[in-house]
Length: 215
Image 1 (cartoon, rainbow, N blue to C red):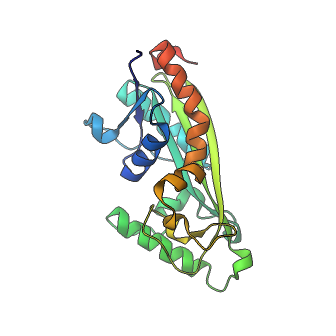
Image 2: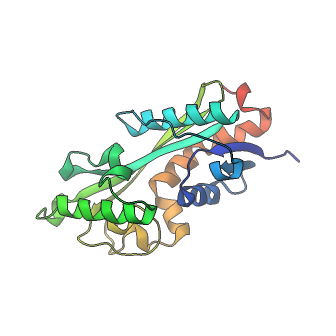
């Protein structure tokens, strides 16, 4: 029986780690988080103008630091009435808060204020997830992208998920992303779509046993 291939999931967000691990369960890949590895992993500056560019920056940086293949994603919310914002600034939209929960609450409040007076029919939005797998030498081994469509509600609802999940109302439903059970969210979400698309490339690593051999 082949041993699982160890891949660094380059995020400090425990919610993302849980989601991706659940989606890839049984694929012969052992996902390690930054906390699992310990050590000093300075966060690279995300200077990209798109989710895909930032995912590449993070994947290359963490793969080089860890000396192992790294899977990174950059995700956020794109709201049509805001010209695609908050976009790559989604996690830092409000710019306040010391804990993740405080930042999420501040971001949600700023988004609702920005959309005050915008009617339901013009509140279309989507979560976007760009995912990138890099070898330690900087070679990009795979890139994928997924989206999760909806509209922005008028108040947060639901206790599952994180970030803007309580505000994204699903098309044709009276549920937000935060009101979905985890298994259903993983089956439908932007991160789920991007992860499933990249899964075959991750599984292929079990056949060569070393991310450096993949190009």
